[in-house]
Amino acid sequence: KRLAGPIQLGSNALAVIQEMDSSIFKNITSSITSIGDKVNGIKSGITDDWYSQFDLASPCGDIPYSGVMERQTLQQIYFDALPQGVVEYGDAVVSYEINSDGYGVRAITESGRIVHGDCLIGADGIWSSIRSTMRDEPVRGEGSGCTYSGYTVFDGELAYDSIDNGEVGYKVYIGPKQYFVACDIGNGKYHWYAFMAKPEGSSIEEDKPN
Image: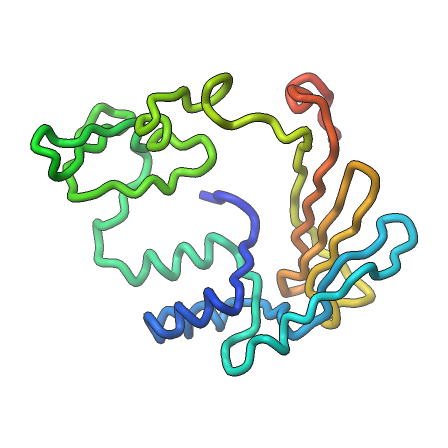
């Protein structure tokens, strides 16, 4: 299942992975598109001139350059390194309870199943049911602690024969109440995303382009 767009791995993250598991690091670097050795920075959304360029290479020293790869490829590399049966799909955790003696936790899934463990890591994103349970707050909406930023994001991927392919890693175009990012993800493909100032609820009320 496709979860999201490509993911950028910074030099520091790659260095940690290299230190922890050389086999996983080798599999990641064989699938990654390096951007740390290319030009990256901010451009004018009107004139196309560079405002600022980021030097990602010089601070690296002996550690790997930053890179971008498909999130699903990274996920699969880690899944393949785990014992069979460790990862389960299709039954998300919706809440949890701490055991009455204060030791251990019971995770409650969508199906009503209870899973016992020593600890529970709430890595379930901005609409976190774990955080909601911990704080006794709604997952979404008023009282959840998550408010609309005023910007809506659009993103996608495209095959694009860019004139600066191989030279530029990513470029951020800044404009009034909007910005646009294009990042080289390898094999002639780019990941793009745009933030635009939009009223709250516009994603529901406005017609979508075909």
